Amino acid sequence: MHELRVAYKKWRTVLRFAEDEFKLRYLRGLKSIGRSQTKAVANNEINSNLHSVHQELSPSLNSISENELNNLIQIDAGRKWESCMSMKDHFSKQAHPIRKTLKQVYYLLMLCPVNTLFDAGQMKQLDSILNALGHWHDHEILYDRLRYFRKNMLVKELEEYEQAMKLEALLKLERDGWLGKAEEGLKEILLK
Image (tube, rainbow, N blue to C red; front, side):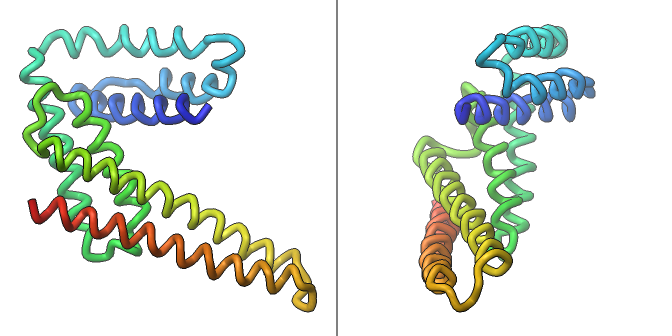
């Protein structure tokens, strides 16, 4: 299911790019994919949805050369990268939007036969940043949910309340460590 979710996000990035560049209407297909992704294992409806999206995209994509398409993707990825750079000075407060945009940059650049924005080492670094941001996000969600549970469900006098507070402190340290690793990785890309 996780791989299906990631594949869906990659498709969504491609479809957003196509929408911006070719002014296509893909929301019907996207909506249908979103609805059927949880049913996909049982009845394979997603294949027909992806096929219909492919059929809608093909005429526009076939009308330009691979080189032109590569250039359009590079330009779009470059704009998204600049958007990330505009948020980097407030990395800890903008971590989630940075993560979402960096994923789009990464997915788009992985489509390109020729990547003029980043070399192979920088792409590997970008992948590491995304992994660190993924771990940060997981810890952030767990921290928030545990804190909510402790404050709203546990009684202060219980041992579980104290244990939850200790676990929150550990989660916060781990979360902040992943965030720091991601920020350092971004700085390394900028230095290359």
